[in-house]
Image (cartoon, rainbow, N blue to C red):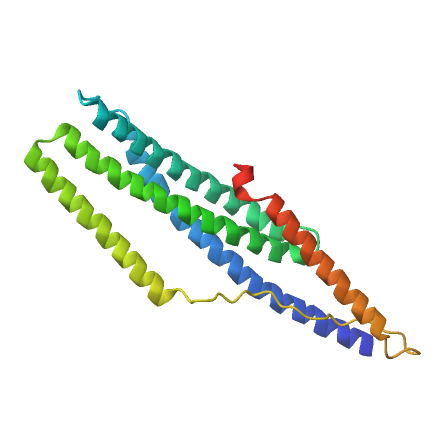
Length: 226
């Protein structure tokens, strides 16, 4: 009777903990979905800009090709990382070995999300630079100055709003949904108290498991995968 009651409490605890981790997983998937949508939009314009006819100014042409190619490559990189994380992240959480699979998936998605946002910011900057160079390649001087000024103001406004929203909405320290604790363990009726050594061995095993997961995460870093 007591054994069944303890098993029921432990099962309910693990289910509630998995619900919290699932909320984290859904958050990262929604972030990747938004980044994929915008990156695909920017990559389409960057790829079409590469088809423009070259001009006589070799310096402008070289700068335009570098900035446009960088914008295209970085946005494609965002698309690839976001797609792989959207496909493999929930798959590892659902079909992984043990309850730690969900936590490990969230950990990897957290690292990948930081790198993806970094690549997205670089791609957006290269896209604005490419747009400014296009105006100097194909428009008159007055039109190029006007277009460049408007694009620069737009880029500055986006950066200002980005910093302002980040300061207001993002907390200084994130709280993760991982629940750390010593799970309930069954004991024999004639031995109601397990020795202290078993607790120490359990904590040591947990520490070794965390170190192993940390090493595995570093080995599977996204820069090495790409």
